[in-house]
Each structure stands twice: as C-alpha cells, then as structure tokens.
Image 1 (cartoon, rainbow, N blue to C red):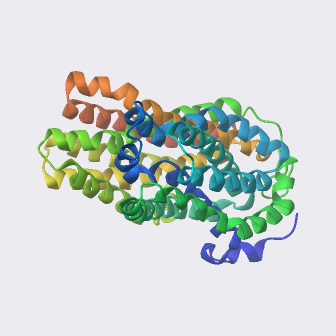
Image 2 (cartoon, rainbow, N blue to C red):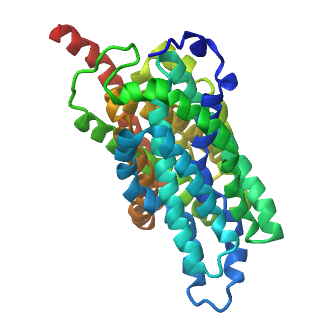
Length: 407
C-alpha cells in the first residue's frame, strides 16, 4: 500500500478526493428537499389528472422508499465491484433521473423517475461512506465526518433556497438542480484512482495499518448500529415532518414559522458539526453520543414546554446541535465495527436505516400525536433520548472494564 503520510497532512479542503466525497454527501438531502417548494405549482400544472394531489405529495418521499430496498444490494455491489465505479455510476444516474422531471410529460412518469432517483441515492451514499472508511483513518476520518455534517446542513439550506427561487419561475425548473452533481465527475475520477491504491487493499482484508484483518462477527454489531440509527432518525424527523403542524395548531403562520424553525435547526447543526472532531477527540465517541442525545432531548423538551418563539427557536437549535454530534458518530461507529472488506455492506445497512427512519417517522408517530397531542410526544421523545444518553455513558464506562477483565 502506498505511503499516504503526505496526503494525511493535507487539509481536507485541499484534498480533491475529500472535496468530492463531501459534496457527494449532499446528494442525500438534495434528493428529497429540492422539489418541495415547487409542489403546489406542479400540482396546479396538471389540472386534468385526478390523482395530482396525491402523486405530487408522494414525489418527495418516493426516493426514500427505493433507497430502503436497494441500499443493502448496493452495499454488496460496493464490496464486490469497488466503491469508485459504483459512486460514479450513481452520480450519473442521479443527474439523469433527477432532472427527468423537467421534461417528462405526466406525473406517473415523473414518479417513476423519482423512484429511479432513489436507486441512485442508494448507490452514491453506500459507496461514499465506504470510501470514507477506505481513504481516511483516525482523526482525519473524524474531521471528515464533522465537515460532512456541516456541509450537508449548509448545502441543504442553499438547495432549498435556490429551488424556491426557481419554483417561482416555473415548477419544472427545480428539477434541473439535479444536474449539478455531474460537475463532480472529474473529481470522482480522482477518488476512483485513489481507491485503486487503498480501497482494493481494504477489500482484500488489509487494515489501515497494512495488517491483515482477521474474520470478525460484524453482522450483529452492524445490525445494532443500524437499528439505533433508524430509531434516532425516526425521532429526529419529528422536526421536518411534524413541526409545521405543531406551529399551525398553536396559531403561528406555519410556512414562515417552519422556515425559521428549520433554518435554526439547519444552521446551528452546520456550525456545531465543525466542532465534532475536537469534541470527540477530547471526550471519546461514547460521551459524544451522550452529549448529542442530551442536546436533542433538551430541544424536544423545550418544544413541549411552550409554543412560543424562544422555545421554538431554542428547541430547534438544540435538536440541530445534538443531531450534528449523533449523525457523524453513527457513521464512525459503523466503520469501526465493519471489517475493511465489508465496509460497503455495513454502509448499505446504515443507509437503509437512515432512510427507513425517515419513512416510518410520520407513519408511527402521527397516531401518538393525534391521540396525546404534541407536548406529550415531545416530552416522551426527550425521555427516550435521555435514556439513549445514559446507555451511551454506561457503554463508555463498561467497555474499558470488559477489555481489562478479558485481558
């Protein structure tokens, strides 16, 4: 394996492979959110379609359903055929299927393109996470994960704003935003070439230090990480999926108030994510999990306390700050439990878990809100997250003791 010490010293923002992988990570949020501002006008542009109201609303979540089904298969393909080729193919498919809505003639065909977009997201996200594990190690990997969360938040804010402007001109124009990732292809070729040196060694069972990796029971811990990821994302998605209804029920202008609340969540999360490496290096991964869960829980408790601006903005900001610690921690933990030659498979499990959490959140939690109201559900979520924080602290304390006893 070639010596990469010079590459490790290079700042992430000067590393072509790191830049490409950071920008590729934004495709996850681009997939669903970009067309949201155009939905009312898109529905109105098909007045003769009796199913327009239903189909346009399903356009946003359609890619997530496909990701859930395809990501495990994409993970296997990444381990078998290489992460770089899968990433390039996924970005090409993303640009083609995503932009197809700009010219397809009816909502059914647009829906089909959105389902195909989910296949592209599964390919890109699975390959991207596996490549991060292949190409970066130790503190550099932690730094990358923090930067990735920040970039996703910031670019998500920009994508929605730009798409909103385009939607004001034509409901078809936001679909053209999906062509932008095609500009990454030259950088992705650099990633694929870098993988030839390090990624192929990883798939042959060679670790970051060049040592051979012994077989390990990776499936059970990977499934546990996936389960915890799914539950956390499900709870976090109370914000984008339920906050508009909470604000409307309490007399706010739901459109503008939701923009303010989610803006506070996104921007705070983006800023706090830049501190992830420093925090995780200082207190450890288990304590970082605990801190993130406590911040998220405090945010939901604030939302449940009173429907007033200080609690709405403060609560949203706390949830965003906490999630910016938890999300990269999940990805780091997934890469830690995965043998190098199985990083694609584990990435597929975590990708499926993330999108499955998004899909089931409104399905599972809306009945509780309808039965008990928003405040009890928010407080219940806070208690659940506090329990997760306590479990993370216990795991951080007990793990060294178990290792000492085993030794």
